[in-house]
Image 1 (cartoon, rainbow, N blue to C red):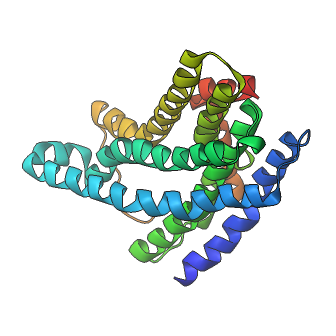
Image 2: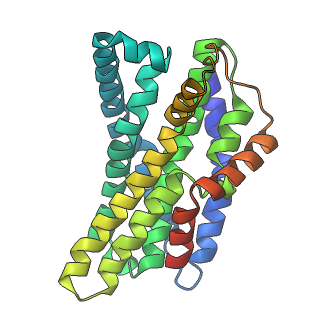
Length: 263
């Protein structure tokens, strides 16, 4: 609990960077700080609260399925349930719970939700809130499991690209395309744009969560042994931040370009 609370403070400090960037993007028509706070709190409290039990249930179901097929479990290694469950559960569950918050802002604060840029800002804020709680949670889980808190690795990776990668980018893309529905009078675009945004957010999130599974399959295909279970590496924050930022720019380049074009 102490590690989690300490991590929560660090995450709040690091989250100020993407919030400042979003305030700058919103400079032409400043939204109320209360609206910013509501979006962040939805991601941090409501979206995480709804997603956590659903994710856990799906991963446990995957674990039970692997027990029926031990050869697959042996192929994937001791973390097979997480490797399979993470791409199946989190993208759909988490993007849906985060998107719900953006949709509620769209419905109840229509005067504050004018266009694609507003949609991106609100979506990214919800993603920042989700990351605000998720980052210290993973640090605390690492400490509980191995007795070592992976501060640099988790915070460097989860706040890559100045905190606008990961959850902020995924839900920001959905929010921007929801903003298209606000700008157009064509009914079919109003319906299609948010659905496309949600699909893009889920696809980007699935790609992110599939990296561990892809690496495992590549190692098996080349005949190499999987690494032994153990504590995560203690990478310095700056090193993890730079490496993950470069990795995200390469792997998620199509989604980064979509985000930039929409802005």
